[in-house]
Length: 462
Image 1 (cartoon, rainbow, N blue to C red):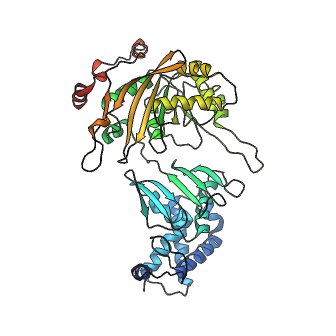
Image 2: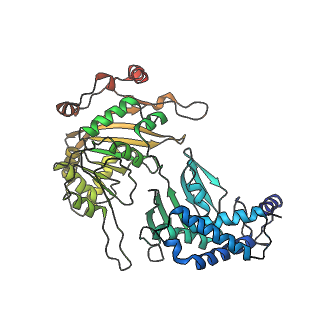
Image 3: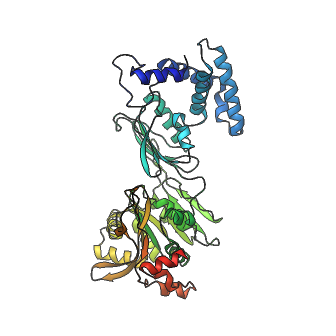
């Protein structure tokens, strides 16, 4: 009987291959303990045989895969366990994924339809497809198996995860963002979350096609970036802030020097003159940390035309505002907030986290003088990610920063029979004050960009 037949029989009659009283796997395909033991033994034997070859950078991926495959066939030939062709094929695939890739989740990471992989423990894996989260039958052998995959990911970029540092942020070679949490913090873990990034970065035309924004809003945003306005992209977790920041960064002229600053490198800028900086956590002795704030300060000495900060989440917000106010126009960043007004309040809080006891009015004056525009993103109930506000920061009135919406998402159109929002981004009909600044640089926006209501929609359709 093949492994697939045994798994099918297990799922049909409800028996647990781990024996009576063993914990069920919560709806995933139950693993065969005999095959798992054989797989682990072959895995260990393969590492003993190949050793340093697995880490030889001189070998291409295809050469390494061929050597692993040849050695696997040799080891399997020495095993006395009777294996069907299906069992042998699956065993080779699983061990190859463990050695060369990321184990059971390797196929999910190579699936273009999967945008996020969430491992809630060795036998519970969820994925995001089309903006919707669903359970996947993939599972790990045990917690140690999952832990080995996590160690492989974080060690590749010189980071570590252990009892002294049980949480870690890392990235895959393709730029996908990784977060891992292990026991004792992760109850029932380890937990692993991977947010994938497209091999081909999304362009502005893709966002228009997806309905995230319209052609006039895209043209307006392009003019603002080329015209060196300071822009904050605001939104909740998973709303698409980094994707939009990448699109906005693509509008920066190719002859400008760009410095990007991130916790883990995610931005995929196509310009030639780009310097990418990445923060560094402390080492085992608690030394050597380089924070985002340190990188922001250092970037000012690198003669940047543009500073792009992946995300403001702490005291670096003060340094960013000072840079915007002292000649570094055209800076871009993201932060977590639910509305443009909330974004200003959060920015205020982040500045206070810098450790300086600044008066609130002074912070607001700095903010209103530095930030020209806030672009608000939301992940809607139907799973789509939309730009819901494009808002101008106009200045101060008394102690309050005044805002003016230039584009707003129309929620009043309701949803269709499939639960999808019918609404789209509409111009409010108000021309922002900074259009005069753009005009002085030769960037002119026609009245059709700011046409409100049906007239603006017909113009976009043309």
